[in-house]
Image (cartoon, rainbow, N blue to C red; front, top):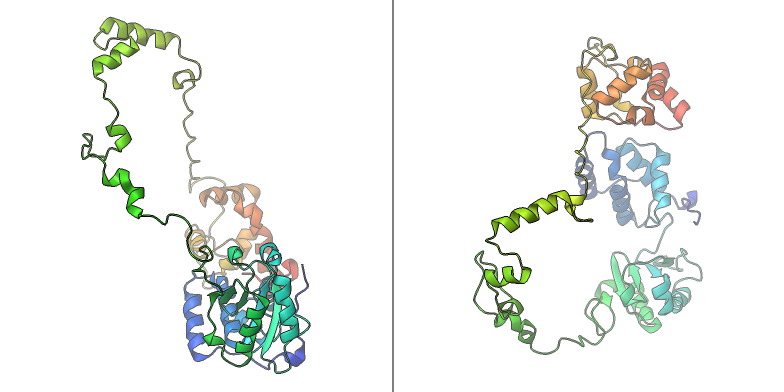
Length: 381
């Protein structure tokens, strides 16, 4: 994986702020997520910052981190992991992303990169002299049947030749990018065959003959009957019974067959297979009077924010409060039997041990957020 770092300080702006319109959008986006889960909005906010400024700046990362109450390093990790985020200044009029994955490579993407080197800059991510154009090679852009292709902004330009890409780049350089046709650059509709369809060119009604000319007869339940079934000769019950050599009106034969089936079930049939075992019942919820229930206390004037423990959300915190758990020190002192009782009461299936609530609670009880960061190397959620 390539190393991705923020641009040097000389390129970084002094500050970042969303525009009025984007600020309203950002607040609405954050509110889509439940309380305590607002950090899930980090990718949408980073994308909107990039769309506003053209690339993701250090001040933008810090601003978004503050908005979502996240450590700066955590937002930086997201921005540097996903290659969709540009960490350096790009062309103000166009940043050309050339697909270099196998289908496009086989169809000539290397020649398209040659055009970018000659028309924009010899090296990817470097801007032209005017600062209006830049380019890079990317992985699959998702339209392999239309290879080779490039993406500029949110639009794709497909079925390219080097000459056509030169024309597109010239148009963007002149500020006329909006006039360029997006999608396939040849006689093709989306991903349909080049030059138009080549099959099923006759009368569509021919392919529906059995539907249009199907008999109107239908079985008792009203379901339509295909012609192949309608034309099949119908046998009577007597003929069917005769072919089976088992008269339907012979009680004696029926009883004999039933008895034989009961004594000697056929191998491989449902009768020879053991009855399926009943599904085990869900484990009973431990009783509130159980001896292993942790001791509760009266609600203090300033209860601890238990949501700072990873694995505890608003709903779990409310449930813990209902059974008298309000402080970090209570959780820090839970013995194994008490942890197992709470785990069963919350139906967690081992989450308390996996998330190590006791260790988290001990750190928070000892020194709050500072001690938590010292122990775990990150802020509590």
